[in-house]
Length: 259
Image (cartoon, rainbow, N blue to C red; front, side):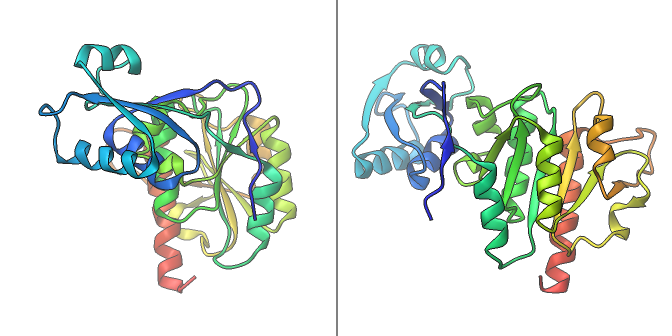
């Protein structure tokens, strides 16, 4: 089934770093228009591998100085490679609901409430991908989007993981609940701890923003809130760490249950 995407008003983007550019070429989810990399003789085997992939895909590769790559990327963390790519293809909510209904593994959706840091967002998408999540949901407002920094932090996982950008997160959680998912919120004062709830059921895991956590209306829509036990002096984990711990607890329980 061909998935629709939300790209209205989006401009072409740049990607930088070996993994983001390589995965964009391999996934072929969005067009790669051109690649710039350090001149021959100044690269390594990994960049040469990307150049070979670009040749197979018919994408032009141009040599560039490190200074020019930094200007193109807007960052000096480009690892000697920058690409011009089509806008990120956000998925529609209807497509996510359809895929959940197609059966197979129990549904798992990561819903993010006002994550501001694009690098945190990228790390969370990477974690969601490693446990086979059906998709990641983010709000259009008060949230980071898929940028070059997000793609780099995800190590290219954004090229494979469906990301849905919605106008109203609460309404989307209600739609997921009607589709049969349990809505599980991550908070510091949850009714249960992460290892004492059933993660094998179809569920949407909701992580709050870096500073304020879950907004009251979002928390109110959760069927259950869970917390991560801590034993040290620091009372909580940051949003990206919490997402990683909770997602991999879901994965652990599901592997043990053969789900």
